[in-house]
Length: 334
Image 1: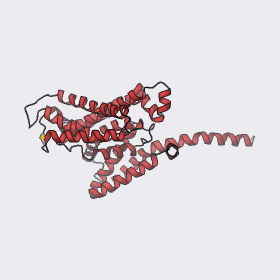
Image 2: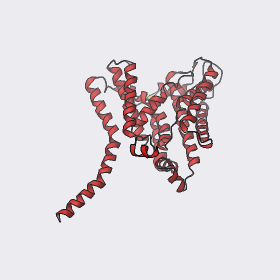
Image 3: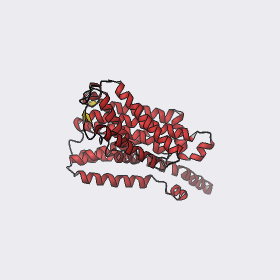
């Protein structure tokens, strides 16, 4: 009887072991965020002030929206490097369509709506090139990065266009419950993305493809069409990020998206979305964005050099990638 009991106990431990490990891995980023906030709160009394928390929320808006788009692509097992190009192109075109200091255009709300169409078109083109020509996603999207920045440079010629459109500027200047409207827009985008991820066929297909493209195809999923659709969806989120970037700057220029790719990838991976595909989600990205933003804010409060901050971010993404990669699968794939 005792041996049977021990056998059942060992079987139970074997079954619960992987489940507990997965739970620990999924909760680790949230625990890191909590510990980080506590430490920074003890070091700097100003960290938990309303003004500083509002500053953190405002700084998180763009990385969160960009990270949401990238999350869908990474869960699918691909990568998207076109973020900076789409952000720059969207912001530049927006500045020339709405009320601005360079021409007489005044498209109002139609201007931001056009940017969503441009973002979707850029994403669909990414997906079409990747799938149609069978080019690795990082190469196809890298090309779109340079195309977007190149078109933005050619359009403005190094100039900066001031945005006078009240609707756009209100995203940065108007506050509700002490938070800029850009933060509420980012939370709305998060809610929409969560619904897509968990309650639509597209969301289920994304996880299926990330877990195994061949198995997904055998189960009847049109992998090519889903891949193109996901890149198009990501492009819409990148365009929203470009709109908010232009609103926060109050103007637009060709390099307005510079540096946003690294921050976005860092946030998504630190949040727990695996680069191997099939694991993670938009709520993970929210946690990852907050970790990156809170850490950067804390280092500013402590007077740490920006160069040291970049080094810390670099170390962070290396550690996060090392922890997220399934080394067994990686070895088999090679």
